[in-house]
Length: 90
Image (tube, rainbow, N blue to C red; front, side):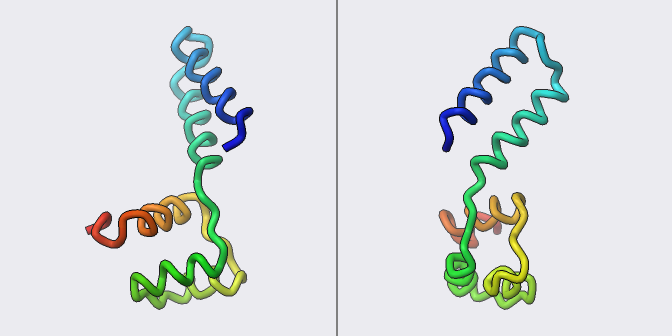
């Protein structure tokens, strides 16, 4: 991850602790930080995960073919499935 993103995250945490920014603003910073840390997957990587999970959804196929891209939430889920397998969700 970018050093700048890491520094901005630390600064936001310090500003929140000092009372310079409110909880709502800190939650926005946290969401942006998590989004920056979300791994991105190529179509081939999605296909490999889907094959391991024996999934055949049309949306996943669209990701594989590059017609659509998974959003941040889906990328987090793909990352979890990739690292821990389907048991992580059961």
